[in-house]
Image 1: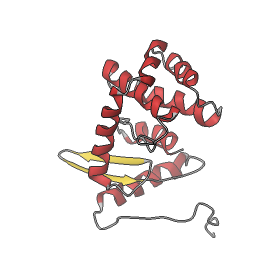
Image 2: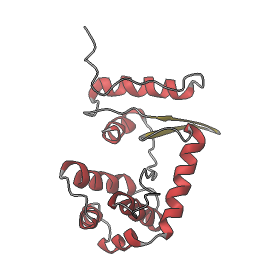
Image 3: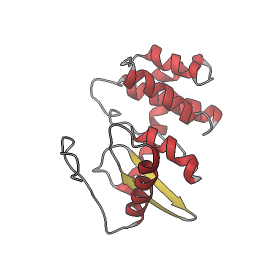
Length: 177
């Protein structure tokens, strides 16, 4: 849901988005999950095509995994095709070499937010400075004017080094009028 919010707000705020890989499953003892295999494919696409198609590919994978509840490698191949990419890139799903790239992407994020956080992670850059924040976690995605206002608030919190966490229970009551 956070990615859908970013996709809506970024062009309105004139922000370029660079999508990166982060796997909560990378060190599972029982082997790679389909989510990790999908990230291997994302890294292979990035190596071949650069940043340009990654947002489309993440959208297509997310649609299949989260909305259609199809977390298969075939769904990743279908996502590649829907994003205008070669289905053959799905072969990267079984190639462990891409785990190194995923770990490198994760290390960049961890350097800015620490290692005791979850996803999503947003990183903001301005010249030579960068700030990262874990979150916001939302459901459904915030849209319209509220999305723009939330963006401004999240960016403000990210740039403030004294703030390290905001959180409430996922089942919290709605704010009172």
